[in-house]
Length: 415
Image (cartoon, rainbow, N blue to C red; front, side, top):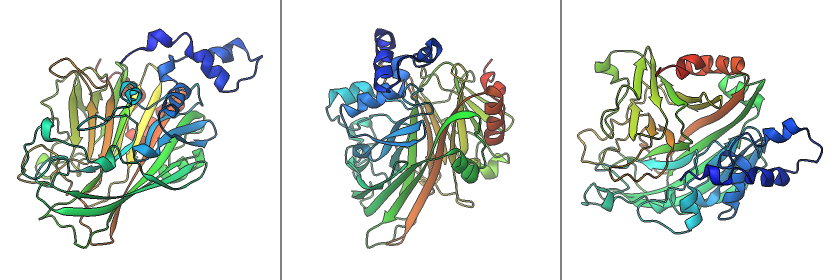
């Protein structure tokens, strides 16, 4: 997957020409367009995507996101500094370039995509009724894999996508629904107004997504026959310098559940997962496969990561409804409690037993509560994604306000 050094010498010159930079700029300005190797440059990745699929670019000044209608309106990547800026989303270039539909799933990548849960269990929509819970029988539904979403409307900074779909869950319940997804790039004033975070003096890209699930069937969705949830997943570029930081609500484990659930793929070693005070630290180096989750009573709705080598703070902020504790459980088995799932998740990619690896990447994920909807009712799941870089003192203030911890504490969490 890592081909950076074969092309880093030539691609930045192409990007400079494509971005329309006039001749006569200073040497320092020219060098700034070549800070990152080309696979980490937004403009290069946008041009790559445009060779294979329609890209809708939403912008606010030099901040931009690349959105793909054919892939459910997912945000593939973004930039805080125009074409030459860092490209924040992980992109599965080999799969996209191959142009072949894969069985089970087409993991194109992207830093924010819309899915539905549960993945496993008696109410799963990834397994057919009576099948075994193994990879051979696991199938991602087309409406969150290969089915394009309709572009309902768009402006320079917003786009609304929609899709009507049907699915049978593992128990045989037929579900008919509509998905609507609106993505909007935010200005500095929008960020301050909607999140009370002041990013003035920083280079930033921020966007809000509102993801709506509507019951279009004739029957009410009830726990006894299975409920769906909105599930948002973001895939980002890993590095030994990236650490995920997640604040959690303190309290008695008997009533609130564990501060962190790391049982998804086996327990995670202390050199990769650490709890300190009311924070979880998780390495995001793409070198060891592991997943963590936070139960709804522990989750604050905010999680983030800090790339100390590139001085990039990423924030994911989700508005979790108060008092809701029933979240779908996606474990690949018949479950004693199918509504005991986590509200927030994070995943670090790593090699499988046979040495193969899809990424590397790391993920930040959020889920809505289980959607008990009557016909015509809707559930909306809203989240904000921010990438920030620049003056470290200002960046540290943002980290303290949003995550309740300093950049230094994040950077040194495993030292």
